Length: 345
Ligand SMILES: NC(=O)c1ccc[n+]([C@@H]2O[C@H](COP(=O)([O-])OP(=O)(O)OC[C@H]3O[C@@H](n4cnc5c(N)ncnc54)[C@H](O)[C@@H]3O)[C@@H](O)[C@H]2O)c1
Ligand SMILES: O=C(O)C[C@H](O)C(=O)O
Image (cartoon, rainbow, N blue to C red):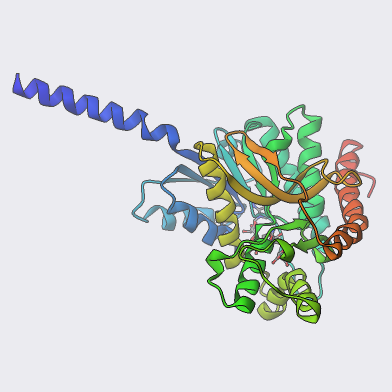
C-alpha cells in the first residue's frame, strides 16, 4: 500500500514535471553555429533554461562544437547536423537564428558580402518554407538591409510569409549606442536604453539620442562624433581584428539579447520591446525599416513606429531612404533572378 502510494505519487510527479515546464521550453536552431558568432552565441543560449533543444547546423566543424557544448551542466539538449539539407535542424524549431555566411575584411563594405551571403540566406529561407514556416527567423548575416528582403521574398513565393516573424538583427547597434552613451554620461550601460532605427549599414543606422533613457544631454560636435562612431562601429572592430573577421562576441551577446526577449515574449511576458529591421509600412518609401517593436506570442505584436524625432533625426531618416531602397531592390532582384534560373545578375 505504502509502496503503491509512493509509486503513484512518483508517477504523478514525473508526468507533472514532463508536461508543465516543458510547455515553456522552445527549440532554437542556429545556422552557422561553428562560426565566430555561432560558437559564443550557442554557449549563451545553452545557459537559457527556457530552451529545450539547441539544434546546431554548420557546413564545417559542427560535431566538435556540439560535443563540447553538450558537456555543459544545463538541461538544454544539443543536436547537430551539417550539409546543405536543413530539414532535420529546422523541423520543429520555434526560433531560427542565422549567423551563417562570410564576415568582412578590412577595406570591405557590408554590401561586398552580398554575392556570397545572398545564397546562404536564400537557401535557409527555402528550408524554412519547407520545414518550419511557423518559426521565428532572426537573421544576423550581412548585408542585413538586402538579405532580409531575400528571406521575405522566398517565403512569400512559397505562400508562407508571416511578416510578424522575420527579424533582421540590428540589436548590436542599440547595444553599442547604449555602451557609448553610458561612457559619455557616466552611467551603468545596463541602465541606458536608446532605440536605433533605419537599417544596419553606414548612414542607414540612426541612433535616436533624443530618446535616451535616462536623458542624455549630448549636442553639437560631441553628438555628431557619437553618431559617426555608432555608424562606423562595425568597421572599428573589423580594423582592430586586422583581417580576422568582424564583431563576434558583442554580436553573440546582441543576438542572445534578442533571442531571450523573443523567448520571454513567446512565454507570454508583456511589454517586451526590441528594435529590429523588419517588413514595415512605417516609412512609406521603403518596405523594410528598423523600429522599436513590441514582441508577443506570435512575433511582432505591435510596431511602435518612428515615434518623436528631433529635426536632425528626421533628416537622417530622409538620407537613409535612398541607400535602403537600393539594398532592398538588390535583395528582391536576387530572388527574381533565381526564379529565372539564376542567370541574370
Ligand atoms: N547583424 C549584425 O549586426 C552582424 C554583426 C556581426 C557580424 N555579422 C555577420 O554575421 C555573419 C557571420 O559572421 P562570423 O564572424 O560568425 O563569420 P564566420 O566565418 O566566423 O562564421 C560563419 C559560419 O557560417 C558557416 N556557413 C557558411 N555558409 C553556410 C551555410 N550555407 N549553411 C550553414 N553554415 C554556413 C561557416 O562554415 C562558418 O562557420 C557575417 O555575414 C557577418 O557579416 C552581422
Ligand atoms: O561590420 C560588420 O561587418 C559586422 C557587423 O555588421 C557589425 O556591425 O559589427
